[in-house]
Image 1: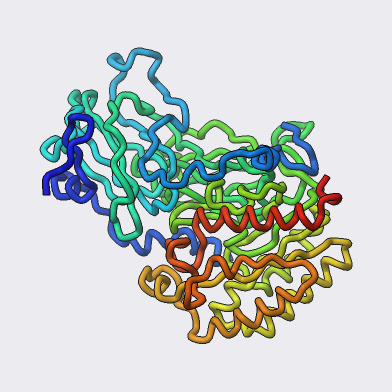
Image 2: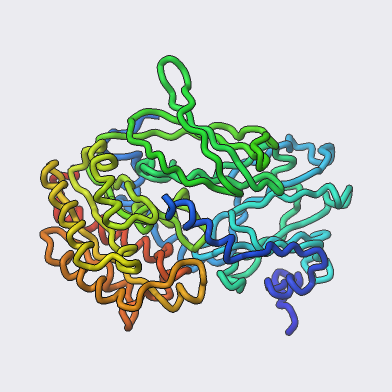
Length: 472
């Protein structure tokens, strides 16, 4: 089939670009690589102190939450500023370039194609990379010599299977990217969230071929900055398991290192964040509360956090991999420091798909309810989201749920909907078989953007309807 003509240029599908490539780099062990979202976390300046940073109020005032729907073409409008340009690209020795784009909802990975020039034809392809899991890529151009300055590039979002989700971006000159970057580029979007999460993920676009990174976290004090954490992560993120319960101003930065810990890049510029207490509303749960989605996207991106879509500011106290037993264990440590008036409790999916019987899940949730009431906190329970066993088995990333998972989940949800305050999200997210609808998930367990938006809007609307005076 001939490639379609777009704007007078020959336009290739992702598959055609792959066939045309002569220098393609295939990364082995894709399924193993995709496991990164689950492995670490399953193993275990001033803002309004109670009302967050104002993001929810913007949503409440009518922000368009449907802005991403139907957008399957990558937007190349700059997410970050460039470097080493100064209007003199021709005078720069082009050693490497960092290309960035905006996330496409539902995309698990991206295909990046280099072209010899602006002519978008199969014969003009220089290289193709099919396994890009971040919204940017640094490419070493030294092997191409002087001709690299004439290159163009384009990007296409892909599904888990590698199918194109839409069209390529329009080819752009390579020299419009960030030239010769010296440090990783942070990608966290906590500035778009009402509160900094209790357990953040620090994420970045790595420097070329970097596989190991060091993250340094400092707390700003009257006596100066104090280093409080040093974390060691993989290629493009690290899950923080220490938690941040002490109010104050902080900053983090990242650099690439060797496997032995020797520095291989500069530190990036510090990224500031603020920890707030007390809060009016907090959310307590597992990875569905914690955030992230589309298999490879961590919770550092607002798009895949249901709290993002709530018209009420909600503090994220989620912890990926938690069972209700884990939640009960950390309640005093993680909930009480923030003194919430309302606690949205959303846990149980890991119980039901694992080996925890329904009666034990209910017992744990009941104990969490008791702890809330003893501390003058109103618990609002959210029904356990369904899972899709067939999709989970097909992906091969997560352990397949036990055969009778639905029996235990129905038992738990029956208890939840009999509580004084509860929100049912299970019904809408289920297909005809009571499984998580495949339209709403990439891996069969975690709801993606559309489902997260539904959860956030539904929970937020419930809170407004039932607690208007408390939320003022």
